[in-house]
Length: 344
Image (cartoon, rainbow, N blue to C red; front, side, top):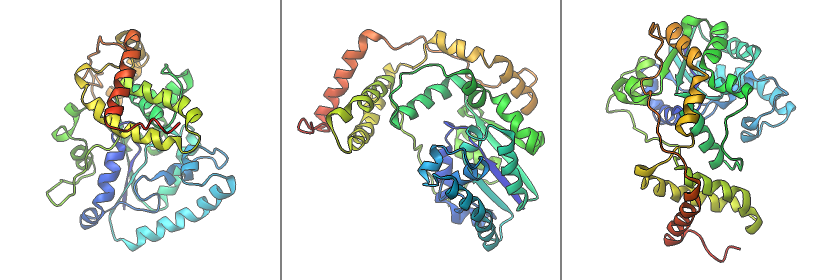
């Protein structure tokens, strides 16, 4: 029996892949592939929780309400048996797992060893699948997600430790290769030009050996995308709205985020980026050597070219435009009657 372990990375369409797999469980079963629900109905977050040290309580624990050492240990005791039962009930030769936290949270070798030991109890072979996105775009997308999730900090380059564990792909790949074996690592690039049929779902399914036909239910990209001015608007709301709205202020912010997606889609022709050209080039220079090693060692590209897209925008956020843009956004929301002047 073979396991396909999709570990992200984050911000490479993992949510879209997971929803596609969950939506097409019956089709997958008919083709001999199980997408189990024991690790999580859609996102297999329990894989990461099982693999982490019991005392290392993180936000993913809070999300699943496995938020104490006692609860973690209970889950770790029960999880393997429940997974075994589900696999036994389905006579499939292949099992697909997908959780992006495996690449972003399992930063210690012992964590990855726990994951491998779990899978070795069930499978003769495990293939690790990982998608890589150009680091400057990954950084910007990560900030966007953080703001949408409620963060109030302004954008900045992360500290060295976070860069090494989150953005240095050679470092991440070597950790998994040291445990699973280099020949068990399949690297895909999160660029449409490097995907089968220029499509993420087609590319992933091809990677695990399935050819999509009309019987599969399609899904649209699921994560919210906002322009930088809308992100700044939400950041300020995250920081200050609770002073005006004493209860459930997040409810109002979520409603505004939903509508700002439409605003952002309407201003893509003037979309600015979080990183200036200089900042993006400087950030990418950190990974020049390690990206070349990834291309050579894991993709057998002797030219060392990992990403096709080497362009940088010259457009930056203009500080003098921020106030004007925030007023424009407010006008957009007022026009759609999304902000009630009486809420204060």
